Length: 302
Image 1 (tube, rainbow, N blue to C red):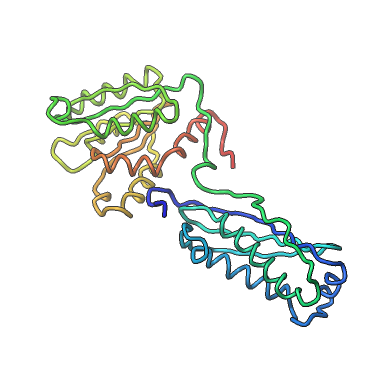
Image 2: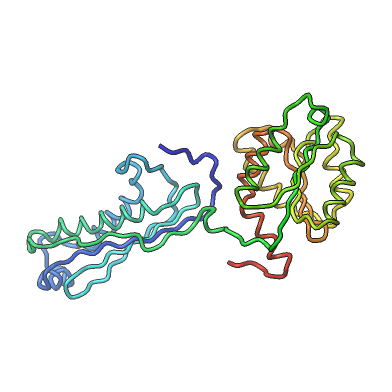
């Protein structure tokens, strides 16, 4: 079963439809509840809800999900019944299979209960109508010429006695979005860090990601340098990063990183550890890129 441990939790929805074709006489008897097995649609609705909740038991590679909502509805036409299943959850993986399973089992239940009076019924279609949720819903178009920079702050890395893993992780992630990059390593010296951040902001760099200097060590000064040059803080960014990390290690609460705005530049202090960097990037990308149309006056798209 595929791991979803690194995925973010978002609202997810899906809608699926199954169509059962039957003789018009059977449809009429269904409408009047003149059937050997009474209350067909009520039973089919319950069966669909149960199927949505039990999808992980039926489909081997589906994850058990905390489903928040299931609705089964029926449209009765002259020669067919259209079954629509809608499923919602707040979780890490989509609910399209739950919606498909709910619609399918509702259709099968109707088939089972109508078969004494119609031997020629057919379920002719089961298909996904829509799905929503996850990172795919939060794609952003970046401004032309968008530039980003990575600043590694570490005495050991600057001296060449420690390999830079965290900066390379950031580089790989940003390059996956097609972002142009500047890259530099500095020692844990507040004035040097401060000067570099200001210089990049003045040069039009729109996103600066620092790594290192966010902990409680005597030489951890990246946060202080960032605070001195910020115009305003964006607290939700690092709240999201720390919350994501806290679910994976209790040490995430010890990170002091800031996310701030200076002019049209966003500066984000990532932890120095490679795991901390990876987890924070998972938490904030690609949603962080929505900040740029907002700063340009575009507001929210949804």
